[in-house]
Image (cartoon, rainbow, N blue to C red; front, side):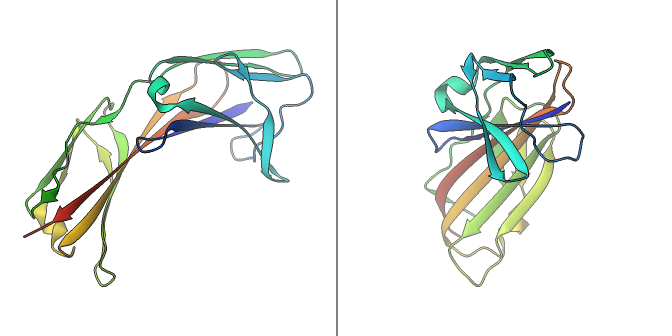
Length: 194
């Protein structure tokens, strides 16, 4: 059995969303666990729901302030097989304070709580329709993401929105195949000036 567990944390949203899908094969759509199955996250039973007839998921919501802690996911299948996954979520923080105004020099974002080689996506979005936004899709090495000043040359002065998404992947240890994916999103606003 395969299990994919996706947690989405946004520091501007009150709760973290947890989405669980199970399948009988690596590339198959999510399926109901079946009568007699029991899925619990931190002791709370989760019921299956569907996006469409062929796509089934189980969902939970965790207060953002309680997400960075130890959690337990348990599954008992209709055949009586049991899985227990103990998950320790380490907090990920954008440690860099973004000033009300930033100039066109190199930008450095310090990110705490990441492991080596976490996937990072950064978007710098201005409010001008005639300029190209900056998009960086990279693998983080260390705790700092550097944006060279030449990447800012096509962005207009004025309001600037910074979106930073960090993705952590962790293997499952309970006997289920696949992984846990945690996506942290940070959104900041500033002004770009010369």
